[in-house]
Length: 547
Image 1 (cartoon, rainbow, N blue to C red):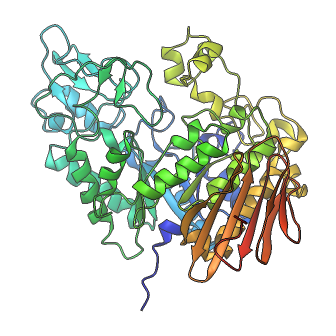
Image 2 (image 1 turned 120 degrees about the horizontal axis):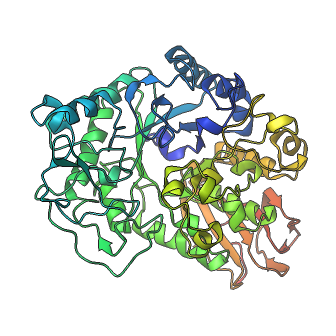
Image 3 (image 1 turned 180 degrees about the vertical axis):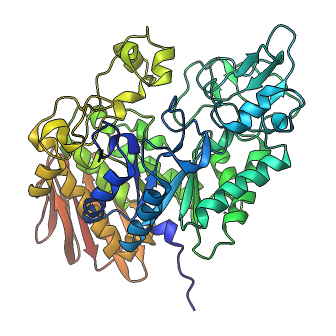
């Protein structure tokens, strides 16, 4: 009997940032009931798995990623009854639910930390990382936001460690009780039927037990795929420790005992070898990890070709690559394309047709643009830390400081506040045109929204896309990327013209057109690919291009 491919290898993931998706009560903040009201539209788009950024109880200093209770819903977003209904309604529509799980740290308002901070002898003291210093931090560790990770507590004359923001103290996983407690949190949600977890900064879980100083590095600016060398420091002892690789296997083993086969996708950074270590040498670690190279795409066929070749070499089956264009921490990809939706369509086709899991951030399906909120006016705590850095300068040097700008409300229609809220929106909706909205793009068969919908449908219809092998096909045309997806006797070819010139590519056998965009046409003996166009064909033979 043939083994059935795991569902998570075949799925596509759609990220919802609850603050900005849909408000139902007029307070200007998105909520669970608002999401429930939009589920039919999410289903209509073709979404298979929804990942929700946190809606647990939180002070909201980092907009949900600072958790004060892992098993309560923040009143901003609704109630536990609302959450139970959300899970039920998503499953009713044959979709899956993934929750954001911040295992690395809590809020400093969490009862555990308040107890921990109350006295060095408190039983919860060892839930966090506390260490004495002699009028200066215990070592030189720099956090992921560029400041010392050590925070002095005057009352107990010790420092606690946080690898992100100072109000997010890191949990101490060298304490078995912490591990046991957090596994209990996973169990709480898995018993409610949640289908998986996105694990926030999972590569930060363990720190060096001896608290050794990190070595010097010449690199200052971090990149999305490399946080372990930044701010003139190689983070050898506070990121990507071997214990974190082992812990990935422990978490995988823990969730695997559930019959509905939940999965884990980790937010990690580092070299390909580091990513593979989190996946496990035998693919027995995290099911998936985010791969962020696509975020820094160069709009050239060669870039995408090399990315495919690299992933097929380093992450062959049973590993599954992921293809990510953006998220709640990254500048929106449409702005990197100058707002050109023709170019966006090529990226979307590449993202969905490559072997792997495409991950979509809300609003990408309509080309939702970046905001223009200055760092000085930003609500994002990272923007506040860097409020005197001009927006143009941070963009120029390639670092993303104000995450408010990628978190603006969804554009549903051309009514007040784009249909997001009847009240005053927590972040400005910004200026937009009617054609930027979901309602209008659904009516336009050539819209970006309909391109996404078509891609979702093609993935569902063709097993060659969900499970097939991938081979790059040489075209001898520098601007055209061609790759093959094959499953048993089914062969699909994808052609993408990233250049400015019309290209004609000869064919040697019969083909069936599955999808075409940008004015591309299938002629009797050749393909016609105008600038910024693409095509998906079903082939009768593996080799379609004339030599």
